[in-house]
Image 1: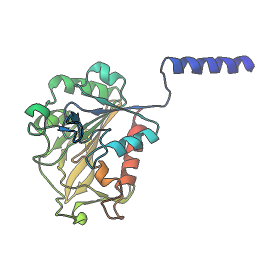
Image 2: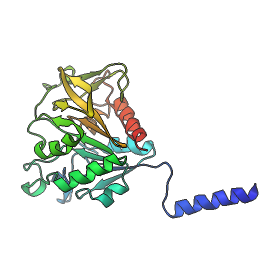
Image 3: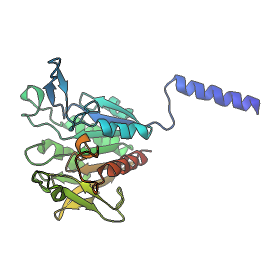
Length: 264
């Protein structure tokens, strides 16, 4: 018994030494296709902003990153197009709001190319979890993003629904019905969302104004989640702006747990 215990401890030490983990999953956030930059007010230095783990302002993903890490995941950022080597160590890869030229640093967006698409499709088939979060018309790149999404039966429609005037938050509500695959029955806030068309292997899971706005696709051993809005940034999950009947924080926690569960 003692010998077996010593062997187990030694094996565990060896695994930790070489960086192996049975449970921790790696969540990679793209910072290449979306790479908006602005000058730091204090230092004047250009830095990435908007939908990044480090950004604690309204448009950042710092709270989303906190939710992932509280579930035991490792969060990291990829500042290049995804190679086979990059994806090999990733469980979840997230692309949010691909840049159009007017948003991109230097005025030229990094477009999703055929090699990246090939790498991502192959990775998903092997068990990768791909998250595609678009934006509405005029605020996101659609042509090349749809070349990737189309590989999974998903098409973002370059339009805009659930438009909200001022603080009329009810105009941005998305009611989740009972029995949804990802979320419990609740009220989410998603404003100015691109609608989605789906065909096999994709299926729609959320709608607004009678239009599909979110979808899931299974391909090989992997899963793709697509939604026409970067809906879970700080402004709408920190509990400071929306009325209490909206459940974006709860919804984000459920979504994160679902994504991690899909990864084998």
